Length: 349
Image (cartoon, rainbow, N blue to C red; front, side):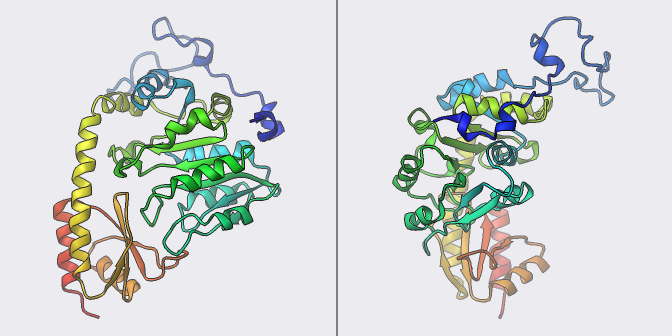
């Protein structure tokens, strides 16, 4: 892949900000270069120094866990940061377009809209599968990025791997992003194994879901080192704070605990699905490889409002493509799911 043709020309020639930690990356020494408070943080914590702008200690440890090289890793403030940066780096405003497959994660469109990048839609099928005809119709010469969310949000299902591979092969000069925010809940391998085979592949993952670290805001993009270099060039200098880096280093030693949580959530999901299917106003529950259920109800908007009045908050997806009369329900604890079902059992039309 010719990244010089892919990246916006002015980004290629951009002179990035050089932080104090670009000039010296060691951890020991007399630091008089960054105008920090030399004593301590008033919070009492060790936050008075700037964090490693490239998070190398974290990347080395994460690379070992994921079976990739540290040079293939970009850490962002949630997955939203690499989503935004990819569009900024690759797409020319008012000229380029991205392809999305609705219904899908809303931030792809939001980030594109902010940058005045056009949207091409390749809707999923009625069963939330990739429609390759729609994809090939949507892609044109101005297309720069094709977004694939798998497991998908809001439907929760894995998208067909062979279809994604066909897209990667068919468009080798366009970036194909496979967003795997929910991959830990699915019984399948990550697309990370395909990184050596496709220079145009970007895999997004997050620590917000299975790892239970949503409040720390940490997402990951795995891709070709050349593209990682571009993302590093245009990101904010210290985009991942010290606390987040420290907590992630501790979390990476607890993969078994993460896997145990995933197993428990999947058991609770199966139980909740069975319970919801017993309700007379439940019309359909779509297959899920994630920690959510997309449920089609009779009169879903009324049920949403009823639950809101009970201070039970689910997601109204009734206005989203292919999601007529659907609510998206995240899997809660045993007690939270019980509270949901008790409320629904009392609902009357």
